Length: 170
Image 1 (cartoon, rainbow, N blue to C red):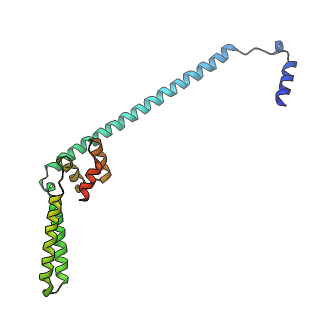
Image 2 (cartoon, rainbow, N blue to C red):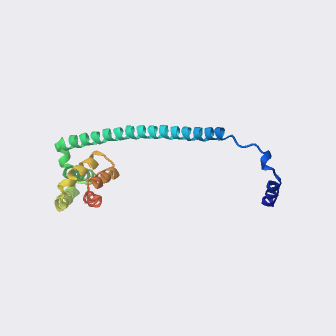
């Protein structure tokens, strides 16, 4: 109904009596809108680019620190053999606890039982072959770098993170 009413009103209007729009004023409004919008977009793009550059610089610093940390870790000789020493230390700790709890008669039996797991540990470490390209990543995990971060680094370098995880589990 509104369309019909508006059409009827339009037919009754005398367009010669209505003043024309001021073309210069309309053009000035459009120009002002375009100019302010372009200025806003330019400043926004500059701010975004500056923030992106700052983020990129921070990321480069973190990467440089990571490289330095990896170099420092590779220079420490004790980190090269942590798997063997850790498993031997754990077996020694458990043997001390067990031997304290047992009586003198059963100490001999406990020592015999304890000798067998050490042989098994050496066999399992001998069975698991650690590939040289994964050694530095194993060091990172042992030092305390989160496993997910190390997996990401491995995948960035084009290696298989699943294979690395299977090496850690062994």
